[in-house]
Image 1 (cartoon, rainbow, N blue to C red):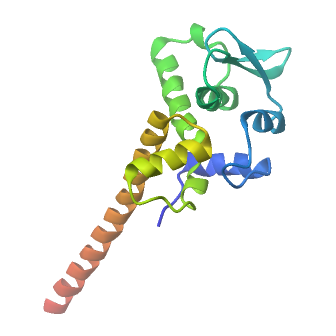
Image 2: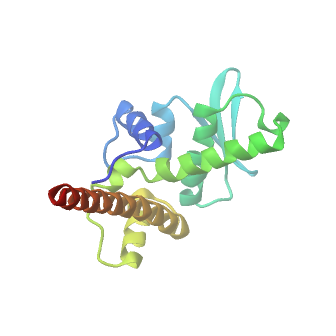
Length: 177
């Protein structure tokens, strides 16, 4: 059984709060509109800013739509979770925020609550292609996200297995005493 983490649950709340529950039923512009975020496309690196008190995400116009979606997911974390001007922060704190934004990015672009309801193909290559197409992310991104998902899924299964083994061991110990 796959249990959502606090981050995954928060992302599910964001999506359901704006009326999105299934993959392939939305795009970047729709999500930005529903979250009341202005999106601008410029010939520069992607960044989250506040303009006249309004949330704004500037996306690199030179990137593919899939890469822009990944960048939007990253910058959205800065908008939701971080305050202030990042370049003025101490380097370790800036690194922490970037790590948080990267974790958020993978889970927002390919939400676990949606991923767990998908019947994945038999091979990893086909699964990566399906995730890439369905969630509009690049293949390397889809591969990393799939690995993250399976690592967590197998961790839960292994933990459940070990708990069951310990219970069986305790039954035998108590029966022999």
